[in-house]
Amino acid sequence: MADVYKAVKLTDRVYWVGAIDWTIRDFHGYTTRRGSTYNAYLIMADKITLVDTVKAPFKEELFSRIASVVNPKDIQIIVSNHSEMDHSGSLADTIELVDPEKVVASTMGAKTLQDLFHLDREIISVKDGDALSLGNMELRFLETRMLHWPDSMFSYLPEEEILFSQDAFGMHLASSERFDDEIDPAILQYEGATYFANILLPYSPLITRLIGRVAASGMTFKYIAPDHGPVWRKDIGGIVGKYAAWAAQKPTPKAVVVYGTMWHSTERMARAISEGLAAVGAIAKCMSMDVFHRSDVAYEVLDAGALVVGSSTLNNNMLPQIADVLTYLKGLRPVNLGGASFGSYGWSGEAPGQITDILKEMKIEVMAEPIKVQHVPREDDLARCYALGGDIALQLRRNKEVA
Amino acid sequence: MEKYVCNICGYVYDPEQGDQDGGIAPGTAFADLPEGWICPICGSGKDEFVPA
Image 1: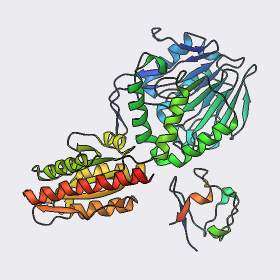
Image 2 (image 1 turned 60 degrees about the vertical axis):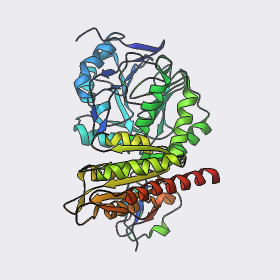
Image 3 (image 1 turned 120 degrees about the vertical axis):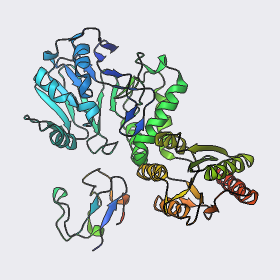
Image 4 (image 1 turned 90 degrees about the vertical axis):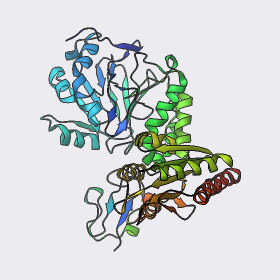
């Protein structure tokens, strides 16, 4: 066991014992340019407790950090707040090493962990509101189903006022700094929003409700300890407030213009639309899917008021990179968006219509008829695109003024 | 009888099946589910469901 990996103290009785993944760049289809961490926490209560584990390749790092505080075999309780493999991948090996008295998860978690790892021991299931005695301290559990898996739950340690929030309030950010106040706030804002947009967005109504539940519970927090990225100890109100705002998805006068192009004609249309948007006072984000990643688009859509999508027509279909991003965005279920479609074509021109059909399926309000141009756009075609941008900007600004 | 889908997780309530774990007998229409009934997958209330 390499002993270069040490625990980091949150309080006298609670330690971070996770792993830093400096090199991950593809997190099941979400681009993580700053890497990530898999956070696990050690509670040095009478009954020593481990909250979550780490992704399988990092188990030695987990064991080493634990061993810098205590012999891992002294752990008596393991709590799994979230069954996904980046937090449970080392669970079976940890159970084998530690042989704990209890392994605890939510009802759905107990089932999911068995489905994932086919364990030969019982997982004890706890329900919303249950408390588990650790001797001189206790852990209280809050079920947070579908935030973002059915098994997800929070654990709260009242004696230290720490909320172990699994993926909520987390971000993909590898850093040697463990706390929010040690990291540039602009990076926290960007990576926190990107995480929300790519992982939690579909469950926004549940987040709004959860924030209300937590506020009503009277719980107080000195630390929010998520399963990815830094531990919040300074700007706790800030990140909770941002979650409330992101979940509300209040549209701003900003349009995301996403396109795929073959011979730059659809690109010229996209740029004309973007110029028209900006000329009438909206922010335009013009994103070629040849250079941007779908998770970048999700980030931009989070606070946008419109999604304008263009594609050339290739063999009677939209380009595959546009089908990719639309499938991804459809799953994320953004709300409060308007939209439109456009594209150049050679002879058939189905793509803009196909895109509009998908926008309708996504319950996006279609703001204009598709603009189609055969081959290379002429001046008047670009003028139509520019006018479309201006019209969308006006509608977005009116919405803003009404709101 | 009409099926209803959960807006949060995609679970489909099929009246022909009911919801055995939730104590709902087969043949129970969505409208007749008790107010406190929750989605067996994600815990959402009835108001999150729409006709499938």
